[in-house]
Length: 369
Ligand SMILES: [Fe+2]
Image (cartoon, rainbow, N blue to C red; front, side):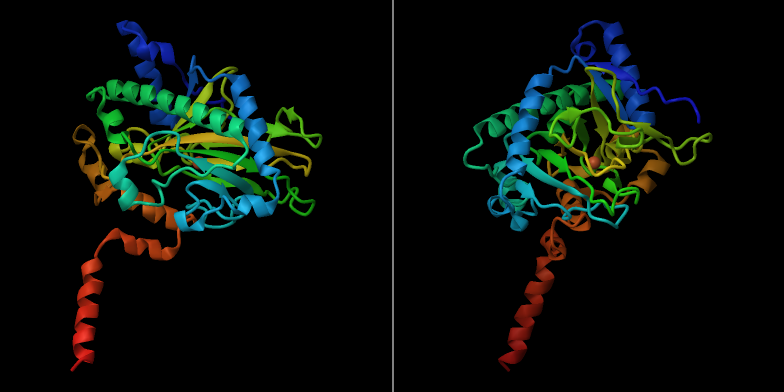
């Protein structure tokens, strides 16, 4: 076994500091972390562990409600982008195989672009809440917003580290389709134990930047507990090198008190591959006795942004690798179809309506002859 990779820690106070040496330290950590590992750990992020526990408690209460009630918050017509997603619905794109053994709840914690609400009604939909879960709603929105602010601070740091305009990423995500997800990974059945069942198959996120405040395992008595075994939990795959052509699997276990930020496909494309989208997987424990709750906030580019390497990140190689350019909204719709949340006919929303229109006009003309 090779040496355990050393994922860098970024101190949020360094990012906000006026001192050159503090900023340089943060830039160095971001370049190594997001460039090689595809992730960084974040210290002094301000997320309160107690508030997070309160949120997880309330989320578990919501998950424990009757199926008939949960179905009322489940909306295939908006591609499950708000409210509850049943187990075995979503699947990872690259794996293309098993659906994940998890149920989820989606919320948009930030203001959304009113024009995009008309153009992309599914990914800019209004939030859906259980009627009588005020603590679930308030802690969800509070932590979602805090994670978003942490992400914006990191994106400003990324811009500085890449010697770009400091607000270039922040402007590109303003009023975008950001979403916070709460997830409950389900207990395995006896038949599934030791079958290498994954709670979430290996994939890269398709958004810009993902913030993970840390999940909790739950034992058979319903108590939060440590990792049930060495193998279970979040693992992330680092960039390939000569020594490790398939990358290295890094356990997503940040130092005490830190949270995780990882690169999505959009940030990889914009930086022409300088930053690398992190493949990650959630491994289930080898026991029927455990479940897990976790949370993730996904920062997305605004849907009108173009996915293509930024001018300073363009080389012959990166232009070829990330061509042709595509709208972030188009990219999102296609991905939703690929991961099984949107129906295949959603692709037809991507334009080219004039073909059909002319076709039906001509067919009508023919039939009236
Ligand atoms: Fe993911």
